[in-house]
Amino acid sequence: MDAVASPATRLTDMSVAAASRLIGAGELSPVALVEAFLDRIAEVDGRLHSYLLIIAEAARAEARVAEAEIRAGRRRGPLHGIPYAVKDNYFTAGVRTCVASRLMLDHVPDFDATAIVRLRAAGAILLGKLNTWEYGTGTGGVYFDLPFEPARNPWNLDHFTGGSSTGAGASVAGGTAMFALGSDTGGSVRLPAAACGLQGIKPSYGLVSRYGIHPNCYSLDVAGPLCRTAEDAAMVLSVIAGPDPADPASADHAPDDYARGIGAGVAGLVVGVVRGLTIEGATLDPANASGIEDMIGVLEGQGARIVDVALPSPFADYRRVTSVINWTESLSIHETDFLERGAQMGRALREKMMSGFTLRAVDYLAAVRHRRALAAGIDALMRTVDVLILPGAFHTAPNFADPDAVRDFTTHSTSSVFNVSGHPAMSVCTGFDGLGLPANAQIAGRWWDEATVLRVAHAYERATPWQARRPAL
Amino acid sequence: MMTEWTADEIAVFADRFGLAWLTPELLEQLRAAATRAAAAGAAVPRMPSEFCEPAHIFTGPR
Image (cartoon, rainbow over all chains, first blue to last red; front, top):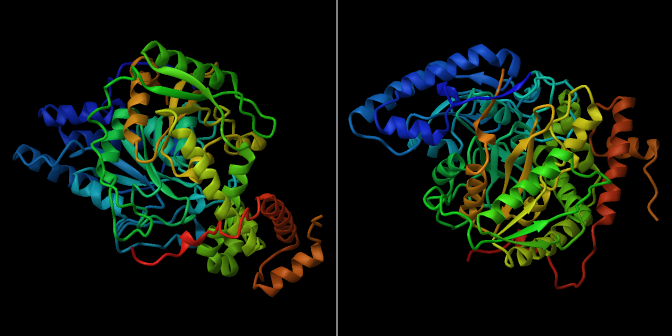
């Protein structure tokens, strides 16, 4: 499966921003756009497996309404008429939400997740429900034991998408959705973005409502978008962010217009760089190593001041705290399912539940307590810089035929650092390796400063050709 | 020094807390998971001070 550089000649290759401008100018029909995506799904998704459920007729109906409203001068905003899809852990009223699990195959919610309510109000058009690891979680392993085929990486169908928002990564990269929503407990937005060559942002904990998203770990779960460009991510985040009384963790923090200052450049920004990280002896793949240095060079060339910094604690500390909190909270959420029907779970979910089953209360409380110290350390570091650049996933997307490499793709990543600390963090495509698989780096920012993270990502993206490249599916 | 769970211990623990569907293979997976979890839990640093509390998980209205 060769990667090809091509201009955005198909509607399904366009960015959200480009399509939005054309819709706003009356030069692109939402009906035509939705039909283009449904055609693309029909053409490739039998191989890509990005969707668990497609709601074509509902999407067509919404597109007709959008078109009529826009023609009548009642355009709701920049996402009006834009087709998107969500990881199947987002509840959708009247539409099956099974989270890729045998335990929930007949589950049809009677309400929409808050993020979907907000996107609907903005006029975005839901195409369907995307593939995911079971319950949106796991251990990193893929065992081919769920009721659905795993999503495939559009850059090479033999390769892994990253998880757990597998379909979100596959769909946007493969052109079966214009943007997608995922969720991120330890990297589940950023790792599929990394594997699939996308820009995926985990916002600050509490910025985006988790209400109506099948919970995985209350104190670590964050919802966020996967997009082709940083500008697209900014546009989506501007709609889905903001306080929600239905979510106990929702922060009383007004959302920004994250796209407004995205083109301001990086001159004068202080960019902290973390180099030399290893995890369990693993080092960065060459493409990821050169990609991150390329990013640093590009930003420095645009006037950013680069400073070398170090994580305040050994990486293993963040990993242990994440694991203990995640295993425990996840079992507390799904204990009844595990005790009564755990044999029907896939191995990855079942093993995670097992990990929580014997953990002691004092271990959990120690992790919760130590989390605060780790988060304070990251916050102190973050206050010395405007953004931090560090590796995200150490490896490019592995081949499914190598199960150890598949598991290592998740294990050898730094993403959990910012789930522990709560800071915003984004995976950004930094090029491609010799096999045509995407490379990545991670940009993290201060609490609530998604705008600067997106601004830095945008500056790099505009100076490099990577987002113009499309997989040859 | 922490000792690993034995197969008999994990079987008794699973039975005590209602895990009734385990095959011998799954019981072994549970034993391995329990050992991993115990190691991770034990490696988390303990309370540096009795005033360093995780009370933010329950607070009253503000």
